[in-house]
Image (cartoon, rainbow, N blue to C red):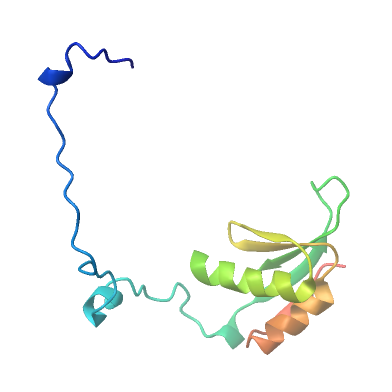
Length: 126
């Protein structure tokens, strides 16, 4: 939309006031922090979840991908775990729905890392 300067005096003027320096606080009190604490997504402990780790190539143009399912994590927790797995495996990965995907054949390394994190993973498939 294009405005001409002719009717500029008819438009309301916006007042922008500056906030005093050092007065804005987002997370100073525990009350503000506690309202952002969400309950854990899963109801069962880590060692009782059915975590499956499998290697697959279907729909990936022949590329091998390691799928991890059954973690029952919230999105934030899953992304933290995925970041740890990617760093330890030295590969890329993504979060797709309830699955974690790691590029390449990372099954044994992923199982080892998940065991150290407190899960009881099993290899699924071939």
